[in-house]
Length: 56
Image (cartoon, rainbow, N blue to C red):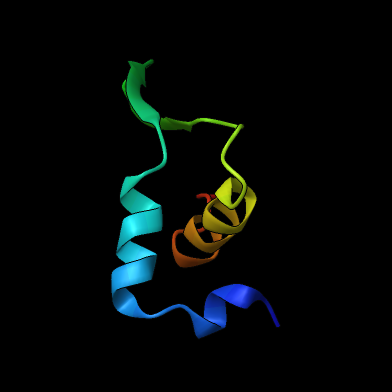
């Protein structure tokens, strides 16, 4: 039910790679920190969480 369902593969790839981010390693874990100023970053983080759920 979001606008991302209508994105073509090229547009999706462009939006994924245009988000500024940093890979940080702490306590033997790897964290991906994304810029909060990108308009669709919330949509991307939701998708990543659904694809890779946190371990329990």
